[in-house]
Amino acid sequence: MKDPSWESRYPGRTTIDIAGLTTWSLFEPYADSAWMRRGADYERLKDRLTEELLGQVFRFCPQLEGRIDHTELATPLSFNHFLGRERGDFMSLAHTPQRFALRDLGAHTHVPGLLLTGQDVASAGVSGAIMGGVVAASAALERDALEDLATA
Image (cartoon, rainbow, N blue to C red; front, side, top):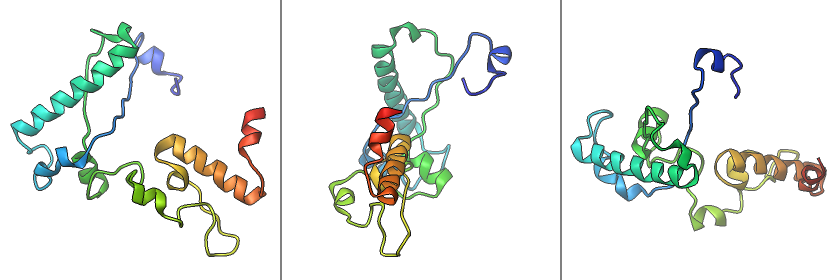
């Protein structure tokens, strides 16, 4: 939808991204292995996870069943490899009780006039980044900027 030439280049085709939550413990046994050389057990794990994710897609969008030509699953180890991470976190800090107890992850800082925004101010991912912007705007304006969105 963002690429105006897509339909002319790929008529009747589209892409879909699926994101899911997982636990590091599934991938920890393979943490010391090399990208593209993790072995058959790892590939079976990826296949199983792909099928589970697709099962959820088909549950909500049954019209897609039988119409997917290609799948590719990135795991926490993929993010470690490509992003230089250590435990697969790719969108933000891990969502743990300890993370949400951190007092310094709000918009306000100890530096006068410096406000923080972004995904870790509120929550992970794109939605978290949007809300991080709302939190920072609210802090800068000294009022609830979320009300502005409700009337827009």
